[in-house]
Length: 260
Image 1 (cartoon, rainbow, N blue to C red):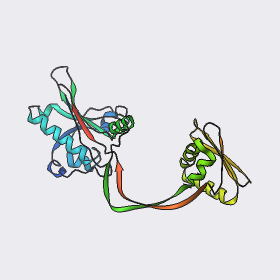
Image 2 (image 1 turned 45 degrees about the vertical axis):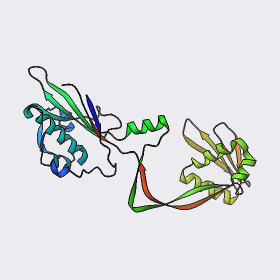
Image 3 (image 1 turned 30 degrees about the vertical axis):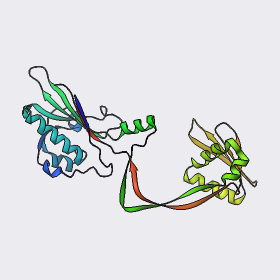
Image 4 (image 1 turned 90 degrees about the horizontal axis):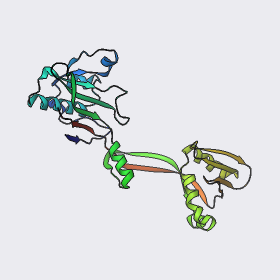
């Protein structure tokens, strides 16, 4: 039993050594064939399979080809080897494509999975990160910086602390969790002297709000507390952000071997 996880950039799943295996011919059983009720395999090169979208990406195709070469090298009869694609109801929710190397046994043994190879995103890393509180991301420099603009709440923290004490953090979270359109409405209403009543509904995961013509805004937190906001406590400004690098989990085409 063994497992390998090979991490790749989710925005670029090409493989620098793909040219070495693009002409390797595989016996493939795609999901569309299975869904039609057939088990007839097709002979196709890895290059054609990736090019036609039968195998999702180059990196996945590279490892499927290497698995085939390894199995044949250790003595598996090529005529008894096929790669079966998982159908939609078989794949894990975090996988985008998966192929099993299956070997046909003698007699009534039928086809037996011996190696699975999947493009399975970075589900494991995300769970480890949540449980340990440790960042498990990789940063990459961008060729061209990404420039974005968004509305940003700016707080007078000294006045906030004096006005709301232990509730200051709750109020900040309620406002900072708002979507862009909600922040724009709050920004406009504060400027025009409206009171805006925000009620946070945990079960609906949404803000319900209405407004009244007074001089301050009122925000209601999850526990029902109301907070009056004024421009002296909060301003909302549009700011420009320049991102020179990306941080993300790298998904991994991974394969594991089973006893056979």
